[in-house]
Image (cartoon, rainbow, N blue to C red):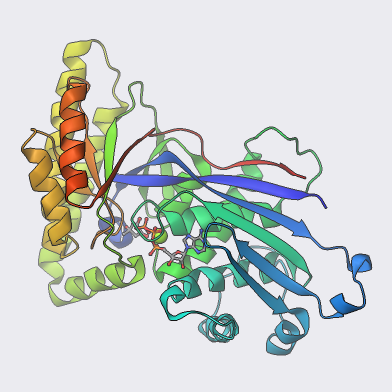
Length: 385
Ligand SMILES: Nc1ncnc2c1ncn2[C@@H]1O[C@H](COP(=O)(O)OP(=O)(O)OP(=O)(O)O)[C@@H](O)[C@H]1O
Ligand SMILES: C[C@@](O)(CCO)CC(=O)[O-]
Ligand SMILES: [Mg+2]
């Protein structure tokens, strides 16, 4: 059986998370940790007698979990489901309810309920793009789930690509899809993100689809050309959290204190603009590189303070900030916060021994540290044999 395979990176947010949901500019970049999704349509003529009740299935390889929905059950739940509307459509609240029930009909172990939103996004994207037709999707990911590195968007982008694209013209090498397809994939992925996040800004799916480093405001992206990519140490505090709840909690705070919070969002907008200018400016010599790093550190420190003021930091995040500061390194949370991952800027001048020391101190607190490449390719596709 042949199909389409898609590979989508993760992302970090350098500044402006949460504020971007409220109209501010944010700056994000991809990281080289990937989600793979492959789609294999099942030819109805292949059905054996036992296969009569064919299904739509998803195999989450890393979790060793399989989920199946019989076509008959889906047709009964959605007698008038419209396949591939002319442009991506938002899942209505009524349909979300029906889809969640279909997902919950799978026998979930209590400790796997965090998958309900991801599987609901899967069913919606599958039925909208492919219709209620049999097929199998296989997903695997190296991204920590629910930790601020865009696992939900990476899942939605890779799924949308595998479901939308045809096998013709694909090769066994990884290729970037054509621009017109990237636009469509990004729009569908955003609809999937809405099911997982509630009210996403769209920054995560956009940077993951198009790659590199971007500034993003009100649905519009601009690419930032970086001639000297930033180096980040990423620390996963392993504290579980959920982006949907954190985004909602910031909106609630903004409703309670509209003027104060709009000043916070505005400050982050300014920080993101300055940060875009700094990382996009040409690096002339070592002196200008050091100057860039110092300015970035100061802006990251200010961002972390403002995120704390929005109520999305966490004692574990503060521990990372304090620990790295002992080594003169600056950190900020990334993504929705509340736990998850923290970024530490590694200036070009920092000695390797200092990075090793800070890493072992962070690991002794039970955190996981890694260095990822920032600002590479976005979505890529290939032929799946
Ligand atoms: N590989 C995957 N397979 C199935 N579901 C996934 C996968 N990756 C993410 N999800 C879904 O996305 C949810 C996590 O999304 P969430 O937005 O809370 O975190 P994140 O995307 O990792 O962080 P952030 O949005 O801050 O960058 C999971 O609980 C799950 O439902
Ligand atoms: C917290 C948030 O700003 C970023 C999550 O990576 C949410 C969003 O923009 O959708
Ligand atoms: Mg997410």
